[in-house]
Amino acid sequence: MDLFEVYKLWDIEPVRGQDTTLWDKDGAEYTDLYGGHAVISVGHCHPHYVKTVSEQLGKLGFYSNAVQNGLQKELALKLGRISGYQDYKLFLCNSGAEAIENALKLASFATGKAKILAFNKAFHGRTSGAVSATDNPKIRAPFNATENVTFVQLGDIAAVEKTLASGEYAAVVLEGIQGVAGIFEASSQFWQQLRELCDRLGVMLIADEIQSGYGRSGKFFAHQHHNVMADIITTAKGMANGFPIGGVLISPKIKAEYGMLGTTFGGNHLACSAAIAVLDIIESQKLVENAARIGEYFKNAFAGPQGLDKALVEYRGRGLMIGLEVKEEYSDLRNRLLFEKHFFTGAAGAKVIRLLPSLTVSEETAQKFINDWKELTA
Ligand SMILES: Cc1ncc(COP(=O)(O)O)c(C=O)c1O
Image (tube, rainbow, N blue to C red):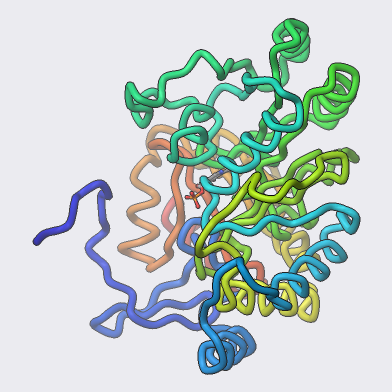
């Protein structure tokens, strides 16, 4: 059997990793500023992470959600405390799309409404409900076509108000920072107006923090830069540094009922131990602060007092969720950074280079990237 080829692959096979360094099967060394798409939050093979997960594997890898699981409770307590959402409840699942799926379902249960308002260029994942709220017709099959999702321009509060006024909407869903779209963020004013509208009209505000959350933006969740709280927050990616997991943080105004949500694998012992280790490392190494600091370092180098870098059209993002939109003539820069300088980066379309490194990334590594970038664009 061969693989179903849905991914365009680089011809590089990493076999070993340490913090922000990767080695391929021939021993060549790479610097990882992509983190496997914002997944590596505490660095590859962090010793505390490896120890915690290995020890858990030797004790109990899995049991179903039919029995008590103290690790789930420990994770919920830690996540509540570190994120500032102490009085919310946690539902655990296995991926980002699944977290969105459960968030949409919960909003619909809680309000008795069927419709969702999402934003142009949004990406919320590829399962059925999530892909319906994802504004890319190429990844939406006819089966996923639904009248239940309306797309509005990010920032257009008048259009949001007009749409929600029909009274048919369960939720508004938006990313803390739009990732796949190329790193775009709603303003604080827009977030606050959304919060006010949702409160007034009884609509749930869902913050998709799957890519932007877990410290990446320089606060635990990116929407926390705007002084608002969401009713439902979805997380995944950086949550367990590569071990599959997703989480939904749920406001106390939504009441749980037995059987309302469920999963076989979600919240299993290994996943919880990985997620607990990640929070321990984020806290003890002050990684949210590091994300803010190194983010400023990058920003200063590319869009500081000396002006915008000559290769750039725009510098976007916060902390370690960075979009470098390059001019047309630099559209091969991402490939050159990879093949000539051995830097893994992400992309959004042909002209946005995305940096989504581990939150442990150092100033030296950032400076090396900046130097190599300047050399290639000189
Ligand atoms: C904002 C956002 N939401 C949801 C998802 C889907 O997550 P997953 O690929 O884990 O299903 C992604 C993945 O890139 C994402 O960036």
